[in-house]
Each structure stands twice: as structure tokens, then as C-alpha cells.
Length: 507
Image: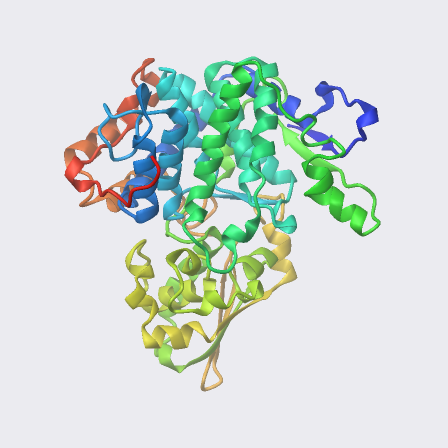
């Protein structure tokens, strides 16, 4: 890997494109380096993971709406849409929209956390949609997904969007465009323009994840995927993009990220150091990401496992006086009491809001000893009197050591959990801690192929027919050998009668 300094330059400097981050990203995407076996195997795992969570959400309202919109844009020889028959194809940007929404709805697929954070599995829907439309092979798809993960994770390692209240799809959309560029074997010049266009159109604020969190949380990465497909289409037609999109004096860094902040505070212009593979270097970033065992924000994964472990030490949960979760800055301020969101303590809050309340999540996990992607968020479950009482006795506090470990570059120190103090009414204090979730690569039970398949079968039970589930599991594990034009086999279909239809819109 090579670190690239990225900063703002005045227009008069006429920064050559070879020095621009977007050009370097495009160079990685255009490099015809082979995908290593362990990376290809992990890509298969994540395709299984995406299908599992998408199908589990197949008839949730946002997913139904997105599917209806996509199917209203049919295209012969286009892309498949989760749940619909494989012969029912949509234009690729709309298939990316529908499938991306389905994948994101339950907030249960993979994650990567560093300077910023990401769900890199969001790269798969648009890359797959274009691959199906362009009749590419399984190997082509694997190469495209490897690039999407690599660029996405490398941007997240280096550039923090959250501190400027910019939503994380600003890293996702350029990565999706780069992955599509690799898939199609486009020239560096074309990918360069697509990456710049993708970033330019995907800057949105983090209000989508504050206060009353709506269904847009699921739509946001799907919207990025749709924008990425369109950006590549324009670039392929010879159209250009705002340039240099990262380094220009009116660029994203200059006016939206740390350039503006530095000027406001009279500080020197910042320099971001973005790691990217060198020419001929394998793309391995997917191996540094991790999936979710539980349907909740990733920072809650280890704390859910810790709640399961601690509940056996507490004879009577009703006698808990207070629970303090000592954790990282990010966990405290995004899903903890440091967010200062009263909605995170509201029994009538939306599922999306409860998913971002570690106080609610820890209370339910402690009481139930299990976590379910539907039952744990049910309105009746959230409104239970004993749950609300326990929930409101929980607070988070930032601990500098957990913040340091959250941002550590040493995999052995990297941590997303915390230390929990349970203060009983009789004065007894119980303390325990957990750094990473059990399913994490360094956890007690790291997820392997069998775990991904088990997750798929668990989430799709009663939704997907056994024969169709078995067919998909067999086909997806043979992904490197799927020939050109066979990628529609990765779709999982339900009988039409089992697919709900939503309210009518414009399409």
C-alpha cells in the first residue's frame, strides 16, 4: 500500500490529473491485477450475506416501494430484482436502487469502521446490476466487487466525513463507480470522470441518521448506487465531471470537509493520507471488514454479546439501579446518550431510531438473552414497562482508552465494544467488558462460510422455498465459474403472490 497526500490546491496551481486522488483511484480500478483466492471466497460470503438480509426484509415497506419503482422501469436483458422472477428485469440503476434498499433495510450486513465508517456490502447491488445487464461473468463480478470494497475501505481509513456531519455515502458512491469501472474493464480516463461525478452528486448531510430516523437510512446507499451507475453511464459517453473534485479550491475538501473547518479556526490546511494499493498489488481490503450477527448498529454488536454474558450474573434485573456503558467517542455520540437525541429513549420511536439506541438495545438483550431482527424491535416489545424502566437507567460515557482503541491501526488493539458497570440497588457493582463481537475475525466465534449460510437460512426461513434456497447456495458458491450471461442465477425469487405491492407513486 502507498499513502497519498491529499489537500486543497488553488486553481492557479493547475494540479495535474496524475496527482489527483480520483485519478489514482481510477488507476487502481483499471489495474488488471488478479483477485486472490481468500478474497474471492470472502466475496462469495458477502453475496450470501447480502441476499440473506435483503430477503428477510423483502416485504418491509421501504423495500416494497423501492421494488415497485424498479419494476416500473423494465428493461429486456436488464438486471434482476430481489424476490421477483429472474425473467422480470429492470434497468440497472433502478435494480441497484431496489436491491440496495433491501440489503440496507435491516442494518444487518457488513461493516468497516476507521476514520469514518461504512457498510461496504453496499457496493455489491450496483456492481451486480451492471454485471447482469452487461452479461459479465462470475470472475468479472468478483473483480468489480474487490475494487469496490478496496476503494471504499481505503477512503474510510483516511477521511472522516462524520465530524463534518456528511453522510458516509460520499465514500460509497465513488467506490461503487470504481467497482463498476473494473467490472466493465473501462479505461482509467473514463473511470476517473465517473469517480469525480459520483462524489460530486453524493454529498448529503447526516440528518438522515439524527433525531427521528426515517426509511431514508435504507434508501441512502441505494441512492448512491443508482447515482454511481448513472455516473459511469455518462462517463462512458464521453462526458466529464467537476475536477479536481477532492483537491480543487471549491472542492469537497475545501468547503465541506476539513479545509473549511481549518479556515474557520485559522489553522493550516489539512492533509489527508489515503492508502491505495500500488500497481500490481492485490486488493485485500474486504478481509478487514466484518459482518453482523445481530440486526443492529455495528457498535452495538459486542455490547449485545456482552449483555448475553452478563445476564447470567444478575439474579434479578428489576433490582438494577443504573447501568453505565463506558465506550468510544463514536458509540457515545452516535448511538449513546452523548447524541442528545430524546428519540433514543422514546418507546414509540421508529425501528430505525431504536436500532441507533444502544440504551434500548442493551436493555432488551439483557432481558431476553437473544436478539431477533423483527421481534426485538416490535412496538409491543419496545413499550414493555419493565423494559422502558431498565432502558432509562442506562447511560453511556466516553472513555478515552476505548476511543483510542476504536481508532487504532493495530488489529490486535482495534475495538468497538466497551466496559459495562451494573450498579445494583443494594450497592453491588458488576463489571465486565468485551472489545469485539463474537462474530468479528478476532472474536470468540469468527464468521466463516458455514455461519454465512446459517445466517441466510435463518433469515429466509418461511420466506424462500427450500428448493430455491438450496439452488442459490449451490450457485453462489460456484461464482468464479459462472459464465458470461449467467449472473441472473444469483437472484432469489419468491412466488409472485408472496410479494407485497405498495402505494402507487408517479411511475
